[in-house]
Length: 86
Image (cartoon, rainbow, N blue to C red; front, side, top):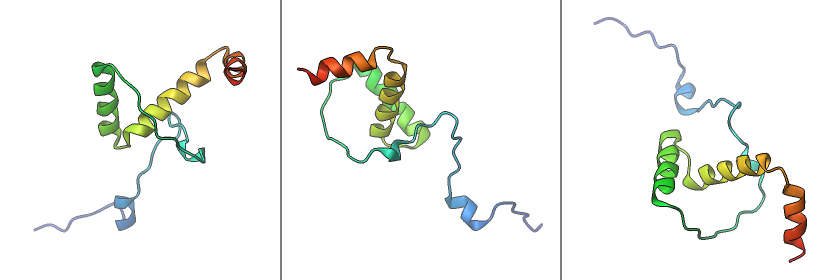
């Protein structure tokens, strides 16, 4: 039997390397609030599939999606001001 030539070290097996290009840092948030929302069945199915595929919690998938939406929202300052006045 031929000797195996492994290129990875033992530590490489247990550390995950992620591409930082498309990943939003969710660790910056200091507090989290538990809340309940209703999703369309197809939307929830897609969220679960993305979570399973990337091996990250569903909450992180939803949080990343919300952060991307907030980044692209043009009138965020006006919306925050109106919301704070309610």
